[in-house]
Length: 137
Image (cartoon, rainbow, N blue to C red; front, side, top):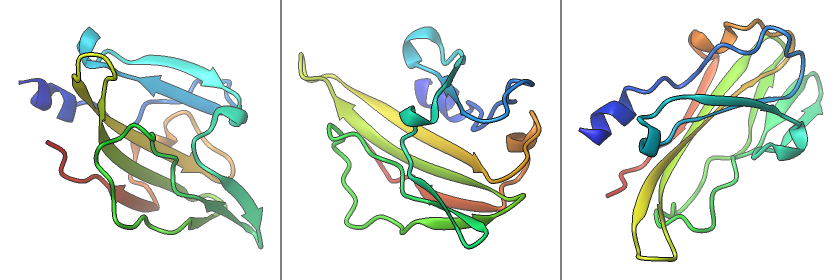
């Protein structure tokens, strides 16, 4: 039941209409029924590396939690997108609490655009998708 609710959660949300640059973070947790909680953060809080070069944006693989139990033998290389394009990068893992050994599942979705964006931009189909979702027990 929880998996079905979690899997039905959206991978993107509209951006705040006045956001011109920055990080729009939306968190959803099982504890509150996967209700979205949004906030705008500075790029310093970004979990991916962004670099402009030769008219494109290089997006490095997202940082993974060091507490994740699902390790991957290799991660995809950085991706490049051109002006007007956007990338959806998803990675999942399982985290174990240091107290009691309980675990929880985590799915991080990074929607990264290069250039001018609209509030609804990430609700469509991405120019490029990188799927690092693996089987986690």
